[in-house]
Image (cartoon, rainbow, N blue to C red; front, side, top):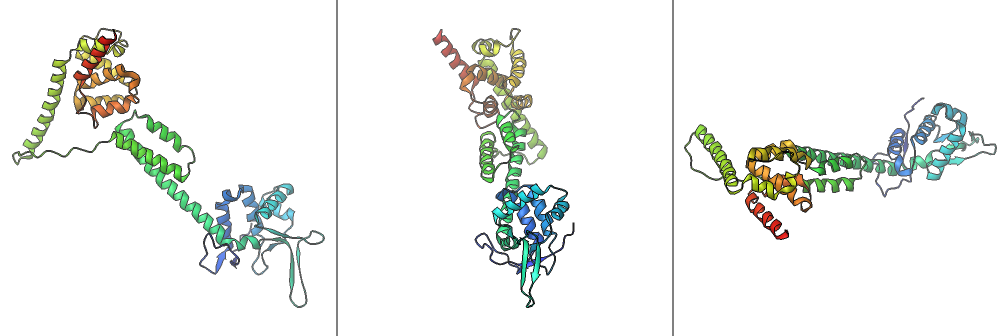
Length: 351
């Protein structure tokens, strides 16, 4: 197939969508614009292949009419049947890209008078060239839209990766990834990005500013002091929970969690091991449980599992709630002792 580079002056173009600054435009630029924007006009790849074959018959200085026979066009397309070719041509005529100039015997040719006047019989592509500005503008719009969709999609994927690292058990991640498998429009991508940002704001908490403490100007002593302070705070929380709440009371009040155990829960180690077993069943990743254990202590993290399971349907999302009360904004507000007392009192009133 011969791809002859032709150029033409744009005339009568639709300027409502944009204009072409150059006086002349390459014919294959117009072809690529229509190829990229074919979905707007309901064209299939077969239509574009037929148009490509017809454009290849044009020669410089011989006008904008295709004089090749249907058989020649079919061969150049790749051997399609003539009925398919006629359907493709009729579709281009309906869209206003091709105009038929039929002779009396349906042959395609050109005749000239002695004065130089010319009449061309065939498939005129002049309407296609006259709409060059419109087609290029549509193609540019579609390309800009594609780039914007790709940009927003990358933002969503980045936030989902961060969200997954922070809370792997979050069900929003699987919902968002299923949505990204579809071909979304730009507004749908923006809506999904807004939902992702909202989910990140729910789970992520800003770091608390460090308190100003006067310490010796020794980096080693400073680091040891901070490490010991964190350890003392964690041990203090565990001791408080251990002293004020007995394992047998927790197991008795939170009978929903206890019912899943095949053995008696005698001490805090049994409570912790059972909580670690229950966590994945509740949609809480084991890694998240370990992070919570390191942050608030083993007893408090285990109590959170037992209490959440006892509350049941009152908690909409176990994973997000567990993260919030052990690693998030509500970490300091979570008081297992007070909750167990409240649950115990409620159980006594219902008996």
